[in-house]
Length: 522
Image (cartoon, rainbow, N blue to C red; front, top):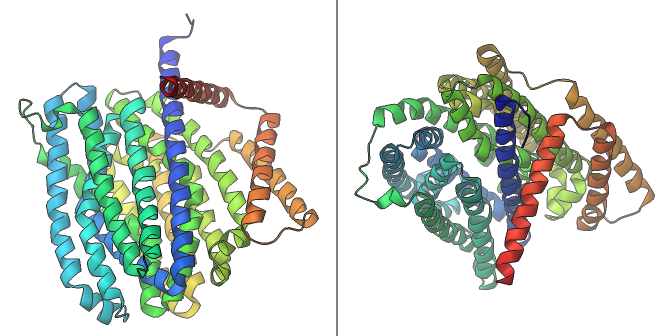
């Protein structure tokens, strides 16, 4: 029994859900980032920077097409599935999912055909790289599978069941698909296949990912294919949200990736390969932010629907600080060990370390802002998200074309960082104006101080301990930094919300460990 007021008890329940969800997602995100990092290393060391550049150009094209095929329904599916599920309306839940899947599948088939038959034009006329044609055609086969897997995962996210749907959506995107991709990349390489073998591995991984996601969705929502439950289709409601979000989704994707396309036009495939490694490695600092996204997004929709804006504002501030603290630790490690990290991919990639640090700085700002884009889209302000991403994209594109022809890789990094920062700044100010929420307070000073002292510790350790550049330095210095950072955080004192979050996170991890041990013993 507790003597807490009902409102505070409800808030504690929300923190508990976030803690459990973030714990599950962080584990999955961590595995996913490790697998993606290993995939990049495997591709870089197996095929070199030039072949990796061709692979990245093909992958970028498919990512563009996938965003178009989703038609902005990712946010719509999460929002309406969470909303209808909270009201116990299975017919509308089923209708929302089926409408989203069939619509996006049809669009993906059309776009896959355009990529397949237009591969020669893109390779010869746009990029002036003829070997890219076969890569584009092979990648086009993955597009419908990629789109179906993505939409099924978003549908799972809308159910918000930490022990089920949330864990399932994380495992599909962060574990199964990248793991299958990495395994088949190595298989085809050992069989003597060239870069097309790696592309084929990507196609196979998307097929497996969609199959597993669909299995999980049917497990969480058995009525998905139950014809006795009529599917209530509400296309106007779904498309009213999806319309602005297709622009937002497409333009937000352009911000970090437009540089790849422009580099592909004005620079060599080696530059594209080095930039891709730098940019993807820089995004490691967003791991913590995305770990909270899956559980916090549907919670935003629920709290807003129930008029609990005070709880939402309080949770937004707390979650923003937690994401910043975790992201700061990853960012500082990335910056301090930048040359060592890039050396893992090979000597040719070390020159990209300044670009990696610059882009990582922009992503750190994104993490400090928190889930502003999701907060706006889940509360009916998706048009503002669209306008912010359009403005940021225009700025990023202008900077890209101004700098890349003269400055190459670093010009692309400046443009990407500027686009990310501008988009988040606009959504941050919009959230403050509309909802009155603001993430920053004096509590942010504690992780900043802890990070600064831990960074000095690592710098001194690097001077005192002569270590060869590369993986050994990372393995030795990373644990030292993380231990120092955590110890200093605790020494500076945790806020009540921090202690509550950590206690619930630890309790959830212990329960899960006991369940796993019990399952292993039976």
